[in-house]
Amino acid sequence: MIIFIGVAGSGKSVQGRLLADELALPWLSTGEFLRMLISGERRKEMLAGKLLQDREIIKLVQKIFALIDVHDEFILDGFPRTVSQADWLLNQHKHNQLDVTAVIHLMVNEQTVLDRLSRRGRQDDHKEAILERLREFEEVVKPIIGHFKDAKVPVFDIDGDGEISVIHEKIKQAIASLS
Picture 1 (tube, rainbow, N blue to C red):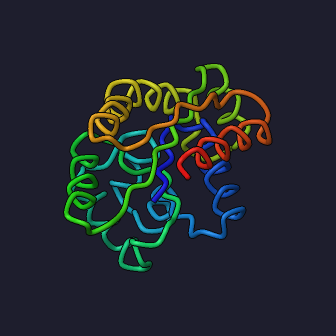
Picture 2: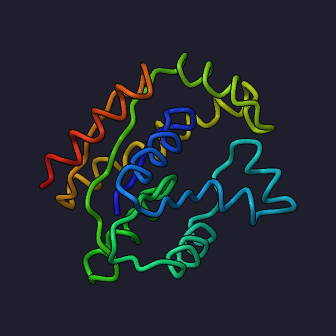
């Protein structure tokens, strides 16, 4: 699996789908599945920018993984989002339950995130929720990148500011370097 990590608005979904289409791979987005499956109070919290509990997300990811052959290459967008989730994923990798090929870390500045998300127009893309996502990314998600590096998983830091096609070329070059 090729994992896309980045703050909301970094272009994970756009770039993940582009790569999946180009390589003819499945694209699995935990965010898309969450928007389809989560309701009630948990949905309100999610729309406010709060992360769901690790066990809830891992349970959802297990359901998603049951839909495909996890030993075939695929794109994973939006998971893991905590060190605990990364530990679970790396443990699955360690025990040959799935294969982790690489991590694509899309890096963008705060203004890019604000601009992109305000244009996207989803209900959870108001300024307070965006700022909360930026804060949580720095505190909770960003440490995962070092975790993957420590586990000897190739991590590619890609500048996500700029034109979609230029960013996509950088990602393709990174993936090609694995061969």
